[in-house]
Image (cartoon, rainbow, N blue to C red; front, side):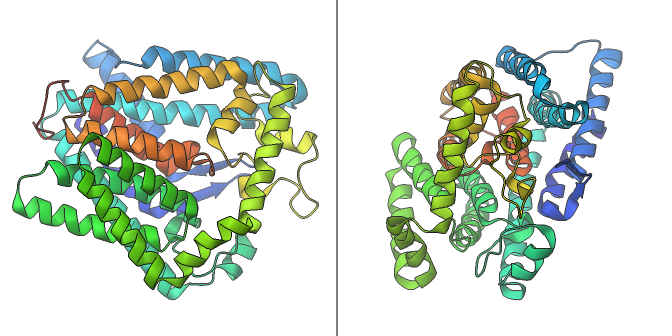
Length: 408
């Protein structure tokens, strides 16, 4: 079990590598170093559970996970009639990755119940890892404020004057910072220890500054939703504090004000999102029950003629839509979307039962923030965000419903 635990720690500290750990194999197939470590972690955990402990216990919501996975597989098999063998295999890799990341939830839940101080260690490692991402973002903004040249070589968007960090995308890294900030803020609100409170407060300010400098409007929305959720469940002071910081940012950072003003006129990026939604709706309408197959969305867009001549495979974003829920609808139909929503609703309800614990509150806030963020970005299926959220879910589910001390 300790080997599995150290592999989880390795996964957490691989997060700051981001797109630098990206391996491309053609046809849109992308693997990260994390994918290989997760596979090894799952294999060792299963061996330990079945061969050594001779028991395999599963946490709540496992049935919903199985049902969504089954419908996703059925949707892929149903959609395979429009795909070549290689395209079907490529599409199945996305489903395999989703299952692997869900396994993180199960493994962390199991470890947290078996090994002493697991929660405390993993919590602080998550915060430390997110701080590394933020610090790397500050260096990137200082050394490479114009990402145009690198973007032209790797097919990324040519962002300028924004924190991208190693994620190479301000929206995804902004969503990641919102999750990190939600956990840090929740721990801060519950902590009664001076040194711990100082560390959490300083960490929160660093993450907040990094988030502001992403200039990501979807992340600003997610932060506002997180603040409102904290106000509803725990403390109105947090919402007031974030509101004051927001006003100061708009007043003293012209780029922040400009980004928000562009919403009124629907700038190029906003129009691109609207176009992405229209494409997803178009595909969904014609494949309403089971979708086109999870996740053969890139190949479906190609069949529908949605890709431009300059980007025949849709680039890095070709396999997703600018809305995670629309992607689920388009690829798994209304059956898949219903199960996917039910799964996360069940996770929310389990977090709600533990809302008097900082992990329970952090999970509730993270879900609200992430779902609002995913309306504009495919963040629910971004590897780093999936890893963070499923680890947090596993930690939260390991907490007894009446447990107050998150480190007991």
